[in-house]
Length: 269
Length: 367
Image (cartoon, rainbow over all chains, first blue to last red; front, side, top):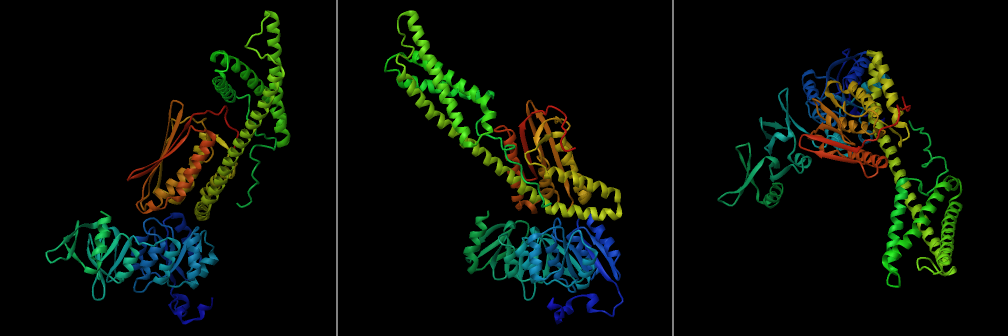
């Protein structure tokens, strides 16, 4: 409660941050169950200064709508097929001007403990209208590191199923199983995948930790997907090269990583 | 939900006994077999002393069968009375019955032998010659063997009871486990329907009530397949409201005999697993198939669902439910049931097999 007084609250949201504004708060509802969306929509309809900006039935739709509709608040269900709520929130937190997130769940013992510990807003379904109103008044952005912590504590969203890349305002979701490799450049990391390549604003070190053991570090600046590697070859000058099944490029293995790389790649083949 | 009625005493109302039912055909058969085997052992042990092996075998068999079957008959008749006594008193009485029977049979044999000898004028080696040296060892053997047998029955009974208790505890744990998610999600659905479609909300509440009534019932309850299928369908209706088109269930159960006896909550947990682990993780949903058929005297029911790549890892809840079903089927059909899991790349299939036992009448149970 004390943190409400702090300046950090400036990041927190529209009504309190901007009391003079007469605009309504725009809320995006994300839930895979139609009755659950219906209920939130009808409750939000009873609140003043709140409008429903849109409804999404899964994580992918939610991210597209976040980018396109620019809502102020996202009401995000935790248990969803494909991409769970924690993963969606992680992608949202990486947006330029991310909306605030309020999680909703019917029952999630471990995740809720984690939310309490991280002071992140959540609502239990069936949601009471007073609690919904209060949560919307207090809604705040959720930071990436907080979500990482939750992912660790709750077993949810620990390994993302998609990598999110941005091209201007457009959002591109790349399924992790389509990624051949990540390679670090000057400022960004390049994701090479089935559909081409994209830049993402993440560190190679964090990616390596997140995607153990499906991805293996073969060089200071590259991380390859074990499932896509077809061969490790020795070149004439004694260096090792990694070759992929459906990708023409080859990547060098650094001396320092050679022994470990060979062990990991061969162990899995 | 937390106010559960206290569990009923495991074997009824306290008038329980560890003694098996000696009137049962299986018990009688076991007694005859054991008596025959003991007779063979005794005959083998004695044959080189004097008489021929077969004569010795016949002599011992006749004696042992008379005693053991008479003991069984007496214990069968007195069992209800013994059940009312304390553990110590009933054990002592049972032992007294065994020793007493042996005494009476031995006396009869001895006097019959004497009569036989008097008639023919020669003593037959088939019958005992000396009175006390025949009677006293027999009584001692009866006391020892009787005590050992009673001890065995007691230990077997205790073991069986602990297995039953454990099974019941597991059911309770399972009930506690399935509730929260399902309950709150269903309540949320009902809350939404209350505004938009009150009559469907009403139906949903009726369905929930039926389902919870069954799951709060005594976990040892046996119901007919018709009732169990009805419970599974009620469960499906509730999940259908929540999942909409994503959930499709194909019922191929027309061939199943409606009156077959099954432990309650046999299919519903399978359907719950199939929906929770198979359908919910799939954004586009999928089809759960329930397929049942009868082959001679065996019922086979299969439940299968498509496998989501993502949810493959989370299987512990599933295994717990299967162990639980396996255990409860085993209690109803000892040694004659099976729960198998067949996992291929695309689907996950659970197969139940158990003997066809028909309930005698239309049930008056929960409905």
